[in-house]
Structures are given as structure tokens and as C-alpha cells.
Image (cartoon, rainbow, N blue to C red; front, top):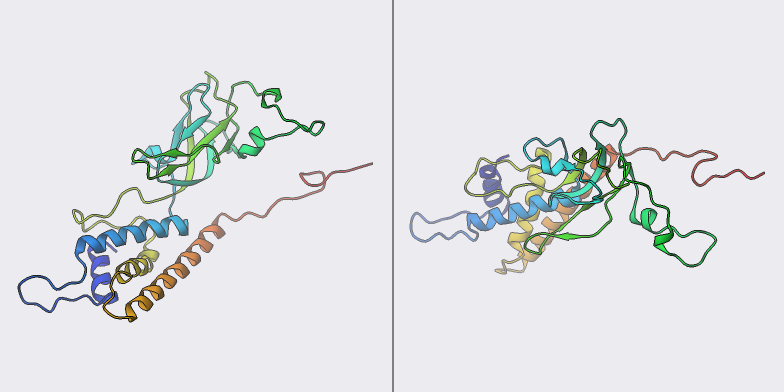
Length: 258
């Protein structure tokens, strides 16, 4: 559905906000600008909580799904739309980089000591990055209102691998807001969720209307329906990337003793 259709559905069929005037000042409760703002918030909220926007090899916005390695640089703030990384692969390699975390890279404590000196850890010489983590420092957007995921690679890229691209598969937010300047624009989330996201827009609209006590109850009903839609979408999204956890004797968690 495009923005014209979404706005019409929200105003007429969900909120029942119809003008009864032939002329003069509009008696509509919500302006188009207000409802479009609520639709945008619903769009972003569905993408963020439902994890339904997956992206890879984005040719229009390559900065979303690609990072260029710099010699000796280990941390790379990602595009502000990125929520999380599904996988990362250095160009020219066959295997994905392994995912790890800050605690593995920086928090190892040797078992024969009760103190920890990070300078005593053996470091791997710069080379081809083989592992990555995304739980590093938080980078704020230019206006201070957003935070960005930071990609950390290890080991640090050597001169031989500087300039190589890391291809990312990501879960992200919408890249652009819907605006009245382009009423034919279509939300980025899958079309199966276009009508479902309008429940949250209706909640935002009704929560501020206090003409009668019923509006607050209606608003809460719409919010609950939206949350149910999000959880169902999230369940299906996570099912797509489910993989059985491998196990076996002699692997992590299992050891042989003679």
C-alpha cells in the first residue's frame, strides 16, 4: 500500500475521521501531517521490534551493508539504520567471519591468577580480520538523539587487506521517512504488515483525544493489537534464521578425562 492508501485507511476506516462540512474550516480531528507523522512512527516501531527489514548488498545505499577496512583500524561505526548484523564476510574470502564479543576479546582472565592485566594478553599481529563483535562503544548521531552499532574486527587489518570491503547482512530500520511530498511512496517493511502497523498509528492518534472515556480504551485496544502483530512477525523473522545448536563430545562444553 502507498502512503495515499494508508492515510485513507487510517483516517476513514480506522479512526472514522470524516469531514461533514461542505466549506469553511475543516472539522477533521487530525491533519494529514499529524497522521503521516504517526504512520512514520508506526513504520519505524514495527521494523525495530519486529526485525522484519533484512538487507544485504544494498546498491542504492552501499554504506548500509558494506564497510571498507582501514589499516590498523578495528572499530567501524555502522550506518544509523542498522539494528544488528546477521553475518559479515571480507571480500574475496569463502567463510563468514566468526561472531564474538567484547568479553572474549578483552575479558579473558588466565586461570592461574586472580588479577588481570590486559597488557599481558598475547595479541595477534595485523592481518586478515577473522572475527567480529558488535557490543563495543556507542556512537551518537550528529544531533545526539540516535546511537549507532559499532563493528569491531579482529585482528586489525594489515596493509595487505586495507581497502577490502566487508559485506554485511543486517537487520535495519527504514532508510527514509514517508512524506506528503511523495504520496505514492510505499513503506519498506513487507506489505503483509502495512495494515498491521496502522494499529499503532491509531493508538497514537486516539491517546490524545479525550472527548469521551471510550477513546482511551480504544487506544489501548489498538496498541495491544499492534503488539500482537509485532510479536508474530518477530517470531516468523527469527524462525528464518534458526539453526540447531551443534554439540558433541570433545567440543565446547564437553571434555575427555582419562
